[in-house]
Amino acid sequence: MSGLIGRLRMAALDIAALMLGALFVIFLIQIAARYLFGSPLLWTLEACLTLWLWVVFWAGAFVLQEKDHVRFDVLYGAVRPKVQRWFALISAVAISGGFLAALPATWSYIDFYQIKRSSVIGIRLDIVFSIYGVFAAMLTLRYAWRVWLLWRGADPGKLDGREVGDGYHVQ
Image (tube, rainbow, N blue to C red; front, side):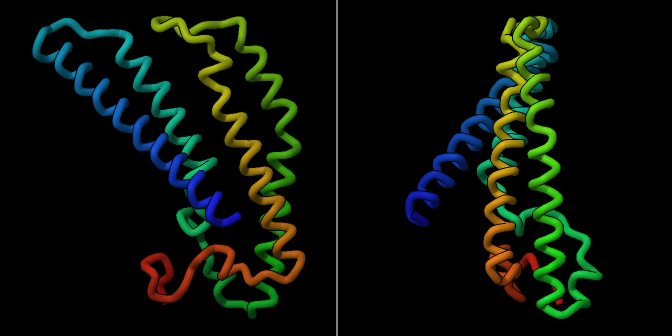
């Protein structure tokens, strides 16, 4: 399973890199049109905004790991490992539960936007914003899985992939 998950994660990373590459190329086109030719293109701004939205939520859903997020863990680091596991469990329940509770309203909002299109390119806005629904669903599943693992006694440090001296963890 980890081999398949690793390949899927690499494919997601490749897709994110392609979206960032497209964003960069479109941004260069925007700069050239505005400053070299004196004729700004509206579609480039809309494409950049849409691609940025997709890159952020795509990476959040499929690329970033727990250890990649900024944390304020002064209290967490000061307690015993058993208490740390409970903190991690409560956090995972809150995150998963919050996203799960918001999923119906999220889907309703995205579905509502099928009647509108972006102003320049003409992409349906439900397609533009659908990546947030994917992000919310993936975070719900990811943290539900984390709840399951923590409930069964998993070490939160091993789940996070953090070790002293790994560049993420400062002692």
